Length: 75
Image (tube, rainbow, N blue to C red; front, side, top):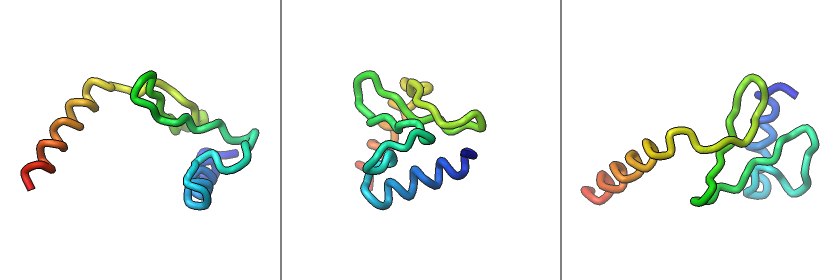
């Protein structure tokens, strides 16, 4: 299954049941991990196929979160 079809399946599942994994597991579709603050993992979408991985540059993302929180407070 090409990456574009897998991504389409994830979006369709999410639109139907608010879960990119759908209601039943699909052996052709790697399970999208539930995001948690501790041991956080994200789904990496690459040409080799989607796969869960640690959050890249988590420290940098926290800095951006703080910045945008500050920007929202200025409105």
